[in-house]
Amino acid sequence: NIIPEVKQTLAKIKNFTNRVVDGQFKGYTGKAFTDVVNIGIGGSDLGPRMVVESLHYYKNHLNTHFISNIDGDHVTEVIKNLNPETTLFIIVSKTFTTQETLTNAETIKKWFLQSASENDIASNFVAVSTNLEKVKSFGIAEDNIFTMWNWVGGRYSLWSAVGLTISLAVGYENFDAFLNGAFSMDQHFKNTSFDKNIPITLALISIWYNNFFDTESEVVIPYTQYLEKLAPFLQQLSMESNGKSVDRNGEKITYQTGNILWGNTGTNVQHAFMQLVHQGTKIIPVDFIGFEESLYGNKDHHQKLMANFYAQAEALYAGKTLEEVHLDMKFKGDANKINQLLPFKVFEGNRPSNAILIKKLTPKNLGVLIAMYEHKTFVQGVIWNIYSFDQFGVELGKELANKFLIK
View 1 (cartoon, rainbow, N blue to C red):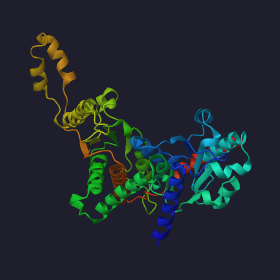
View 2 (view 1 turned 180 degrees about the horizontal axis):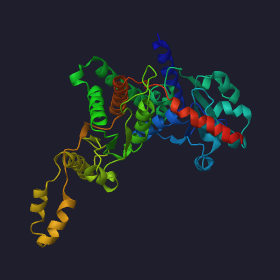
View 3 (view 1 turned 30 degrees about the horizontal axis):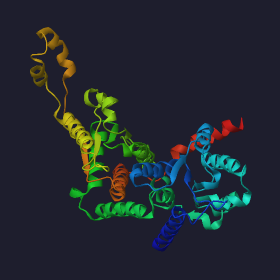
View 4 (view 1 turned 90 degrees about the vertical axis):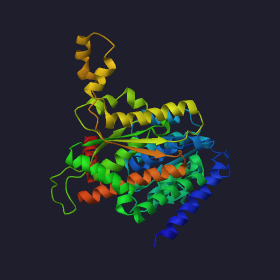
């Protein structure tokens, strides 16, 4: 029974969050924290970063930063304007051996020790990990270690202690609402019949186009700038889970599996890649995600935003025939010019898209949305008869990088 451990971890996250936000838990000089830096990569970065940016409207006074890439220039850019006295560092690594995360953590530790002592690490550093001994040898106090479990996969981990940065950024009440939203989708997925089950329906639609129309890729387009980081998060969720070429018996697969997933926010995409989606030679299924209400209540902007949301979906399915184009252009030039332009202005239509409409971007509704895509990914893996919870494909590159590092 894992529930008592989960509740214990959540209680610790709640207590720690409240103490940091209220200024009770202080840095090594006794000053309250102003900044939080999340150090992690993959699921230890993409999930928390996506949620924190998506829920920026709900943020408190703490400024949140993320360091993932082993690019030293980026690390320097993040920390150069930070005050070590008022910055809380969260090192997120299940094994506490991840090359990128540990390299970045050691670099930050050296920077920190330019103005602090080894003993001060216990005040300004916390960790999320299963490897307690390595965390303690880094200098982090045992009370500041948030445990996770080996059975929690990185790309599914933002609901665990990996979500500590989320809780600090938006407050524990909002983090709890986010978890409750995911739970409600879990219950929907578990208890709803197949014909009304949203994740199952999405998975079946995706497989239909991938395996029977050879679409290969699909696009996710949220019509809110808050969800700018949704596509990178879903890329890991989908492609790391289902980018497999052998089945559960180790046999070579003879059919298409993982989709290539990409996207960005509307209406920006309409001025970037939607030309390909509307008139390209490839059929590219789209998930449009829209919200009925804006957060700040600017009706003029939101009406125009949502008009484009609906227009893009209609343009994909309805298209524009040669006759319709000709009728539009009938009085806009001579006949020869019109006939030359006609083929370029035709939209074939009958191009697939899902319009996912949500009342408002709240922590709970974001939890619902993310859990929906998680369950969709799982269902695809079951139907394809592949393991969605491993990622052996990332190992060879790591081994070769170490070989080149030694050279």
